[in-house]
Image 1 (cartoon, rainbow, N blue to C red):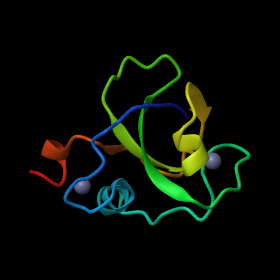
Image 2: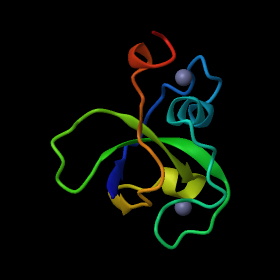
Image 3: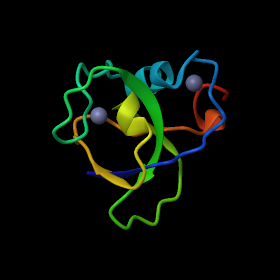
Image 4: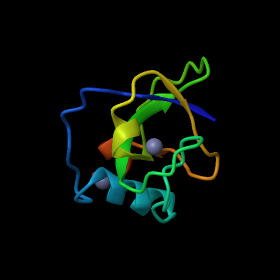
Length: 96
Ligand SMILES: [Zn+2]
Ligand SMILES: [Zn+2]
């Protein structure tokens, strides 16, 4: 699937402690060993704020695990379908 990284997110914490933990808590998945971006073998995984790519009209913010380098990437990224997009909206997740 295609995602678009959102830059300049200052909102760096939630009740989960980190956005990566937030992703684990609400995806029910464990952090990938390698960055799920196509061809990337980095292991410094963080919880990145992303939107759906590929021309999707869904403007919601999601958390998806990416390496620190890809977290700074701008534009669309092709990533593995094996990992879920988790809502970054705290009111729908940990702040309910
Ligand atoms: Zn959270
Ligand atoms: Zn990467």
